[in-house]
Length: 180
Image (cartoon, rainbow, N blue to C red; front, side, top):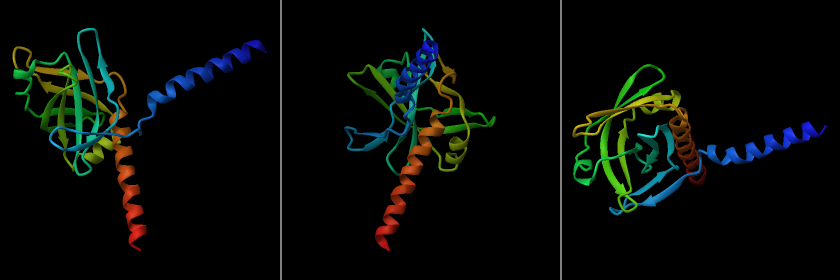
């Protein structure tokens, strides 16, 4: 009996610890220096080793959707500001997608660099329905193209995009009700 109580307690503790980690619909917002209001979710880790790491999330301005990526290590400002190449995103459906470079920003006293890539409207449905498997970022300089094979949270982009699209759909329904 004690074993069952201990096991149940352990499961409840683990569940309560991991639940906040997967609350993907916690939408945050930030006004950037140029006046742009962006909505995002806390970046999740897609890839991690002692040598390099990739975090990211879906970001939106309510008109367009972006893939915001935070690679580590990242190039210093002079070279980093020249990162304007498109991104190759591979999904579980086996297709590779080209996302257009949108912006590169250094944040929090230049300890974080985030690169934004525009998700084409034609690609939204595929990203919504397929896990991300790999991205390739041209880091310029001696390094060239850096490849990240998604090992963690492969469904994060799907879930985040679904949250944003569901929120937009709910707002549209509310507006339709007001107009009737």
